[in-house]
Length: 267
Image 1: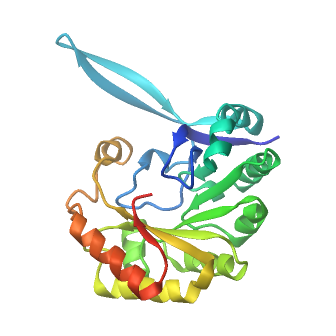
Image 2: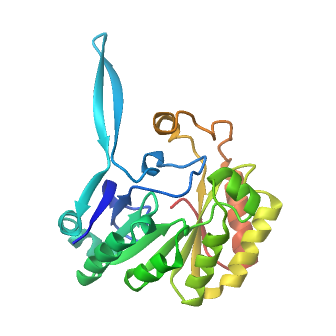
């Protein structure tokens, strides 16, 4: 049985799919989004950080390990503790990251084990992976939470470090396969909230048809700034302004009106 590199397992999650869920966070991601909420997930390797804290006028330094190789059996043991809450709430297990598709063998084994226990499965993915990895896990995923950072190829490369071509190709493959999809769009002022961005998103939703069951608009925030400074040395998105609630609501209403797809704010 293979092992997967994880950096967190969050119990009683309510923003990563329907119902009460356990979210399994995979370590390793091919993208380098300037606003990433989990920069500790970038490298597919165990890392160590040093945290400092002050107590009674003295400074203490504590070393912390980020990432751990775990077996499917061990992860399933942790998931099973909350199975009753998942089943009663219509919840399940969400695979997030990082990018879970960077570890397709482990992801397939873990997702298959969840299906074997009749647990609903979600894959929160950037879509930046070989289609063979996506095909491998497809039979064991009930819902795809599919991230769309930017539909403009130049801005996508500038702010994530990668082209969006593969992401869109995989999304269209999922649509062709009639997968259950919710698009997740981080709203970043000045980067993907312009008129041309909204129009491109509307066109994509029209193209997708009934496969896309809804859209989650995720407002940009700066909560991850300290982690960026720890793991990257700087916070590249520090000058971006947090979007106003009224702007989020305008975009939500506009997308719903033009596409007839349910749109929410937040996960």
